[in-house]
Length: 93
Figure 1 (cartoon, rainbow, N blue to C red):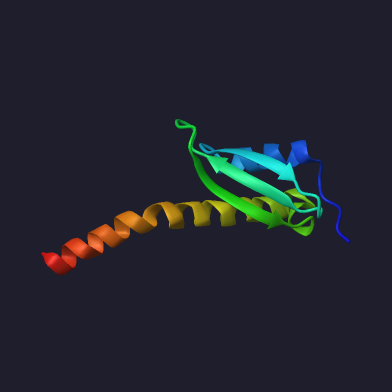
Figure 2 (figure 1 turned 45 degrees about the horizontal axis):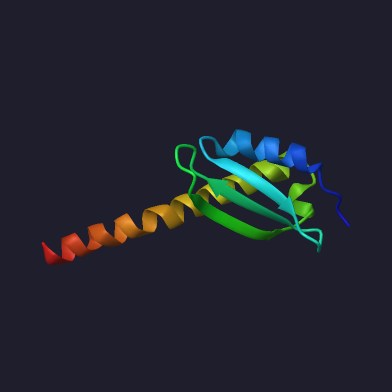
């Protein structure tokens, strides 16, 4: 069983790598984490990820990889609608 870093350390590393987005980490009862990402200028929640394992939080290198995955997912979900709208313009135009 992998032991994870302290919650404050996890939040600090993720905040550094996910800037300008803010993040909050919460421990779940099943020893997994939930990470919520927020846009820095707005209070709206952008992305919530449940079930992050202790293995993913055991050291800084794994947290950097997790931050990269979260950033990819964030941009993929945020940019999906404009891309679809652009594709519709090409089809119509």
